[in-house]
Length: 357
Image (cartoon, rainbow, N blue to C red; front, side, top):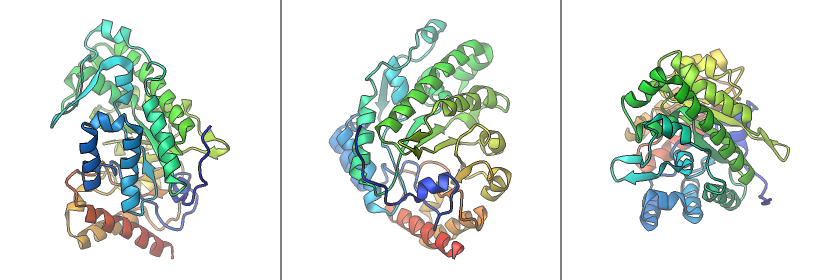
């Protein structure tokens, strides 16, 4: 097993476990990405997005870029949520300006019945990257591993690409729930195995991104998304070499289900910017840590407006020294000025320290 340097800054992990911290830790969804000129240069070198994601050296390079640039409290593996269905044989490819697509989406009952767990070894490039990133971080901050949720992966697998309406998958969900559950059961097993392998490779926390859970009706959400995230969480290893491995779940558009999400056994829950952080803390703060939830669009405003909005989010959570990880309410926009991120991170640290003082 790889030997890693001791962790110098564990603020993020302590916050997830609702232990006291000197300040509120911060990281960003999509922090390694197109808003950084150094990322764009590496991406150019790789030739394509998947060329970048499947090359452990380059994935390590881009994961560390935001950590070198800003005093963030966690690094997140550079990868894509669609690596798992790709390894299940669906043929992932990217079209410039259109995003990810699958060559062989699940269109028929026969397609669904033929679906198999990823081939052993098919995701080794991800685990190699995890070990390499953790090694090169050299204990600076913890490394987050991640996966898409079973439902969110299924959306891409059935639709064949991203969707606004989700007509194809909802037709299956309502018309053939048996097929839907078959896909989701397989996905839950695949996701749990994938995250556990990332933990074995060196991930110190894991996150499940349920990007499309909010597209579901109440009732359908619990049955087709939440139930399967709970299954994944129940299969995760929550400790490695005597150290706790926290698990975060994030349903975009899931704030009104906060009470139910908090009950599935994860350590923390991500919130998008539509949720009221203070109200959710009062509701479920005794069960889970909360992560979020600045509107990413504020990063286009001037520095004073950014500072004011960061302070508002911190004050909304309240003067508690436990259980909050600052983040955006969704991924950072590729058009964000890098200087705006510096203002945000600096304000989170300074104001949260002052609040505790």
